[in-house]
Length: 346
Image (tube, rainbow, N blue to C red; front, side):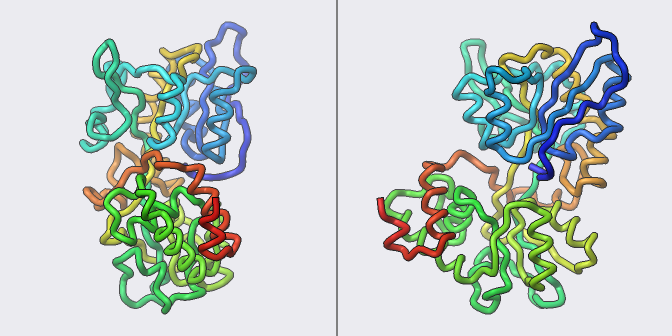
């Protein structure tokens, strides 16, 4: 989920017409040039890497009947479910991925991660392999915030009114507010509690200075307005960017636990080269790719230990919401400044 400019990059030298081609669809920074070149050298294949910057762009490319057929793509666990329900992906043979043994135990045991393993007529089958993740914690300016903000409610604290930067997305924000309110399942808000959650988000809107969508945008807002607290939708990536910009920031997982995204590699049902796709996934779990993911992108790896390794037991992996379309519609009204009555109108 590292966000950057949309584009397509083919990293390969001159190749013969019969050279096998692996078409990869991923977020920027997931496949560094060195990693691609190493893979091409080991497999005598050519990699075509297409980068995307939104979940919707990913969906459109994977499902486009007239576009190129991709062999492997990166997707978070919540989005993965619509590819599964629409029969867009195929099972992965974990026996062809020896590097999974390098993964941290909680990522190696895919059966314990909701949505990755499904029962079929052939038994339990794996449909995605964890690659990178990030917790959505709180970033704070140490010079302004003397006491570590241990609760997500810091975003609503009147003391920081006009000093809070939050994320502009309805699905995530409804889950965030549900967590702050102590609801048992932030992804399935009961109908009778929706209005209360919407009201809580109106209070967040009034307390926040601004809302962002891109990591770079959040850094710009934080610096320009000397913000005190930032809801880090992109986690350590934003910490990395702010520290590189010279800001002395802290990062904390609130006591309510943190929403977290987990991006995995999956293989489309119509992949032309699933054998190479398996080789790619295995390669991306290797030491070089994992190291660069952490040191160059500021992201966490499912293989190597990182600054986020201390969050064991505190991450709530994203799941599909009860009604993402309605959440986005209500949030659009909240963000526009509507009153609660207008927000809740049919």
